[in-house]
Length: 201
Image (cartoon, rainbow, N blue to C red; front, side, top):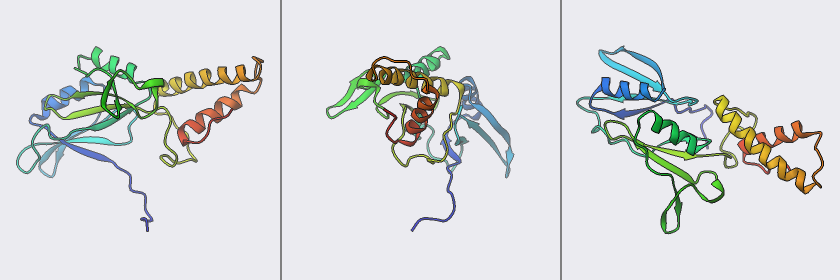
């Protein structure tokens, strides 16, 4: 039996040693500063990554986990090479791209850029670990099938480029003739990609 109410992940708390140092780092990343205020006698700082529905808080002092103990915090991106390049331009040290194989890590992005399969890592000044993961199409049931959304213009542009490439193959399969109904085909492709259903042929 499932709950009758939505349970939306809102905030993840990460432990840091220095609030101002952490604030400076995440500001540099371009994350939105939602709050920096005194709440219940303690300073509360909240950031939201671009396009994210969930945010982060910082925890310090007695009772908090050791700084840097938050690891493998997933950040989903539609173009992992572009996301990695952006971080490097901001002065962040980012690992090389890799993918997972039965024998361990493989160098570079996944073959054919398979969704959910390409990664890169970086850390904040306290050692909290962030994991970039490239997701271009969702597993079935992972998202609300009644809603198709894009968190940014760059995500939408990347999806349109994938649709254009797939549509080019569609036209080749049909004798290379111009498809007058390409807007409908693109729309079906974009929705199927997010819903994890079969794309149009």
